[in-house]
Figure 1 (cartoon, rainbow, N blue to C red):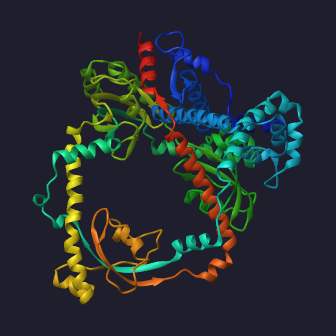
Figure 2: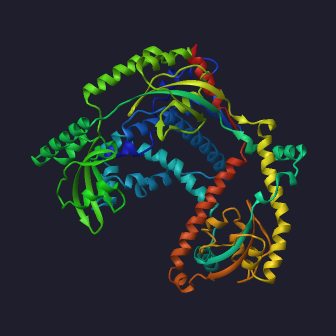
Length: 606
């Protein structure tokens, strides 16, 4: 069972990592104003320490690094910091709710869960399975083994269930009143399978001249005051970028393919596929398991990989297979219908050593001239001397930066981490190349002033007033159409009727995307009757229901129990999500992340 230890440490959440070391090296301890007691947030009066936030982030970073076998970019680090913050806030809210409801967990409950209800991740560990299924006997033997004690598995399971059991009890209380009757199941089935087809005429705001409506400053002020959340904007920046790509040549590809052939020859010569995969595979998630991909059906893999895998016979090893990820050696272990059990070895296509050396030297020159500089001209000097074209792009805070479809790592977060206009970044080292950025301008995010958004508000209110002004026109049209036909009235008034394809209440139809209210009306109006005007979000509609096809009751009855259980599970999830959302919405949360990060940067700079 020695190999099982790998899964335990990879799968179970790392509980104690070097957060103290991270805090020290990040300037979080012993350097005012951020200290070991500084709170990054306060949740209903309960502090979340900055050191806990950084430690949780580091845990997530280590898990991500183990999974991908790659270093973390600033974009990824920012995402993980946000994830860690959200996790800590949620944990605090849940702890408070447990106390309020008197929810506790006993040692015996933890013991029973650990013995007989292993976490889902452990149930998927290959060494705890027999014939692809979780084996309780293997799990029991592993629990009692000296290795489990050495690795602290029981302690980790205790921490896991001390968190999960109260959560399960809380969620059981939340969903205790969720019930789905047969009639409710039938209505849900109807929403999915009733279909309708309508013919309609749409009256769009452009029919009304701007001069025909007036929006006052008082109306704009009133809308701004009651919708301020709508006018909170992320920060905006403009950056210049220099890129030195790690260009891969056909010779590099040929060298990797030759290496794959050499590995294949070693395996055919007697070496174990699993041992070669552990030593050579670039797929860190499967390499540790000897390249095991488990069972998969069609559609699980990229097309070229899948085509090669399905062409193999059990036990056969493929020739090198090229995919967007690199070259693969594939072994088919078993085929049952469309389900394959596979192992693979991945070799990524990378620059040759000589080409990589040239790229690295050029990157060193770029860093020496302009990296981490507060002199904007150094950036332009580097571009001239190294003959690198300057790329320019806007950046939105919190969004990934892409230029001409190419993802630019780390630059987006860097621009909003206390950087001043004119400064250049450190040299960012990514898998596909080196990146250097200069911040050209910065507009902080936050609530926009009424002067900044007055034009947008005026345009929105003007559009709404135009929709209101269209109602009399649409009502007049509906009267004429009811007395003749919708088509005749449209021809008389030089309007264009549109007949939709069939749609359900759930799917709607693209033609009515500006008036979703008309979708619902299609199931309440009498057939072949012209409606009154229906005011949508973007147009006013007069419609006629041409056809309706009801859901098949017999089909419903044949799968009623399955549908009811699906609906019950969905409603339970929905109620839990609504509960958690509301728990956060009514909480008093003081988010001090920006202040903490700014203080940490100041401490490091001193």
